[in-house]
Length: 538
Image (cartoon, rainbow, N blue to C red; front, side, top):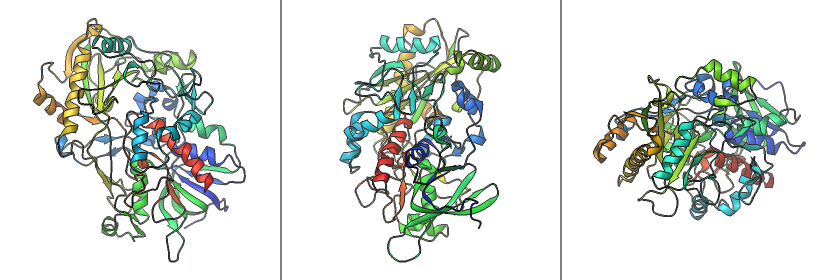
């Protein structure tokens, strides 16, 4: 085991330079007397497809920037394994996502607090959303105007995206210019995490501007194998990490805290590899148990998504665009044209007939292209796609180890549609029905071709159930595997400290007690903003 060439003891070691880790690196290194080490398993975010928004379509399956996870077979989904892409690059998933800026609703956070996540109610978290945000529309009571994370209106939107919004109004739904405003419900264009027409990932917003700080060191290609602890009796105290980089193994000490920001998959995996987790699970893989924390890896939640696809009668979709022409227009004409599109340009939040309260319970993303199997299966011709997901699923899954080695992918059991009363499936059928209704409106008359998925427009509920089991996929929002709370079974307390351990916190989407009503990137950045203050306070 070697020691790094830099022999300093860092005050903080941050594991993972994703959406949360980049925020922590920025905020904690603001004090020049505090030394920060940021370790990232992936490479630098140099690839041009990362920074040209429409390049996300070319990042699909690009293993150099993607952990490329697959779930275990899901019984309720015809025993299919589902693909879970997660960012493995500076910026993490914020470097490969569709850039939709969504916070969720106040009641989502008030429910967190009511369930034991004290201090994470809406009134407490709103200032951190505002602190992070630089909205091009300016600041107001709900939006920030001078934060690092740029939030912009789309520079370009396909005519089909505007037809989708018009169709929503024709179907009786309200229109909405700001999904993060006083009301979430309605149809509209997404605001996106972009600056001057380019992706504004967490790395772009928080890390790149401070890379020259002398007290911040960033190491890419660094896979952390274990968190290490001080010897002795009493509660274990994290004192550093072991990691491999460029074919060599290192141990690095941490003077104050180790901060785990690996996300909903990597954070619980590393806790278990370090001896913190369900005792039986750890012993099964020959790992010494430091702290028996049964719920590490449990409480796994994700938004299951069903896609409705139709052929288009006009060649205005993104299916057959020239990659060379798009890139030429984008880079040589001031980050304009289709290259500045986030592809999922328009969306909707709908309150279904089954909603138990005033919150919308269905979210849609509209794509003016045909997307099958995350875009990995290319279809012939032109078409358009409506993604629809149930925002508050009742099913809970679990992540477990496949082995005791950090390089082996863990076993992901999302348990989709596994709730006892079948409500999740009922809501997915509702998602498919509402999607079909919107696409049937007259706004699409000039574009509507034959149905693709499902292949018929007249399926009853049983037919839609079979379609969902055969085709539903993740919409990339895994959370909850290191749940925050005040009860003894929670993995971290409301200050994000791992229970039974000193000097160790988890700061990422894994601490969310439940899914918020929408995309999870903005809430993850908020969590890290607030965590930085909690860490500074001790």
